[in-house]
Length: 267
View (cartoon, rainbow, N blue to C red):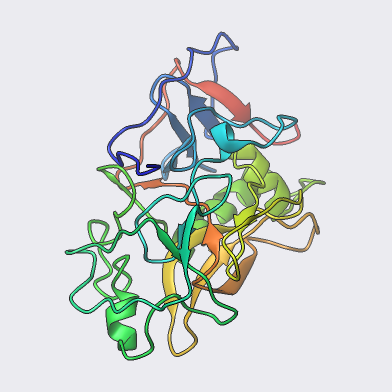
């Protein structure tokens, strides 16, 4: 069984790097958190690992199960292993009565050449609230994250990217690709919707948000783009794909002198 405890995060060794100062991007190895700010007053905090990962990924590391973690079909709270979805079915699922209050979790990966793993009889509003997008509260967006975290909204991504941008507006490497690397987010590959197998190419690294696209059986995901003009790169993706999740902390944490500086711009 590859089911995980969503209230368990994993400890990393305490960093011995220099003490950070300033309103920038920091990492706490002991708290398992990354915080960023462009002004020192408004902070955004995320976990330092994807759900299911046991090791923090750093640029240059080989991508593997330990630093990538689990994959999720959007709305299903079961974390599928990095290898592939070991149990599959081509039968869509009726999710009547399921929502963030009564979460759906199944170790069966639903395979399809279409967009969704859910039976079409179920209304859009029902699907929309599997990860709390309809209710639109931090608590509703929690599953499958640890307590105090949520599956981020696309607005969360926009705000964090803007903070990254304003740290150094003349950044010669400005891109969502660098943004991902600074947040220690690997291009962790994905599980294919048609057969549940791992698609492992370096250019793939999709992350789900909680936002559902009405009438399309798609949800909003983000991915790294190395193009300078690309910002927080969004894609409307079929919810049948298996993508990663990086938890967003509901209450931001302001770094102190024990945190490690990741980036303060190219100054």
